[in-house]
Image 1 (cartoon, rainbow over the protein chains, first blue to last red):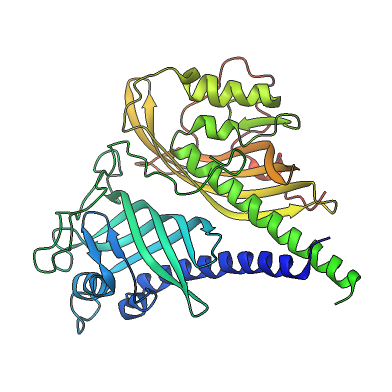
Image 2: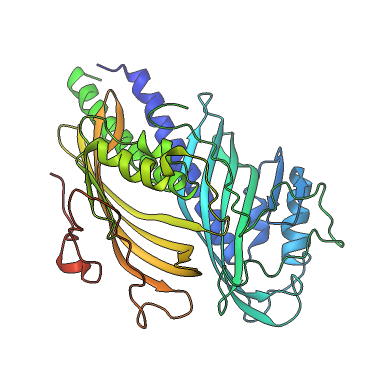
Length: 209
Length: 201
């Protein structure tokens, strides 16, 4: 029979997975609502980076703030635009907690229903879009709370509702911002139809490889 | 804490671990499938206790032998190097898992739904489709690890991106050569065939 100490460790691991799943899903709701300050607060002060699509790598907590507030929000006082929508469903989480119980990784699919401009981030005619991609994120537990250490979203496609990924794989992406430049260029900008498969972080559950 | 209480607690922890492991097993299957990691998929199925695999109208394949035939011989082309066009895409999102573990903790069943974004050739023409389907799968625990013992994905719709499900519910026909049995369920009537929800066995 298991010892009490053994069971406590095992319950802790399960609890950690649930807390991280919740963190990732809460991130999804905040981003859907454009609550970018709350998104920034989900990151550790020791955050490594945030990188999405072809926007490039924003390093450190300060980089995370520049990415979400200065770039995506359009400045701290920017108001949400009427009709703008970006719903990003956080799907199929596989969360792996390190044996230390302090670090973890997670893979998720993001599937998006959007109404946003495509010629620039904030200006121009709204288009209705489908988008899909993969997250490979890292988490860290500080003072009993799980936070993002690193967020990486690989974009597979972002296509007009009328066209689809086969006809128009990507719209709305013209490289890193000149006004809010990233700290490094994008690491994995190989959207559809490259046939690129973002490597999985997790071990095979049977072979352990 | 007395021994009986500790024993009860351990059983409860094992049940939660089992559900978590099975959810991860199913989701990893999804990522492996979408990344064309066919050897990894074969290893997710029990060597001794695999009943069958059935996907859409591909037909039923029995046993671990059937697993190797469909995933390795056919999907992976037997491991021979080959040029698949990079635009061919299978994204099968694994959503809404309901997992029931048997009281003895050795077997389990899981129901999932899936939403797909695909692109594949139809004859000479590249086409893009939306698909939806349900899984009714079975799992078995061997040496402390959960494996698939049965996988069944039933196709609700496979529609051209341009038309939608009402206009064209099911495009194409995808039988594979020499299945052990023909498809067991028709795709357009999921509610009245094999897809009634089932509880713990």
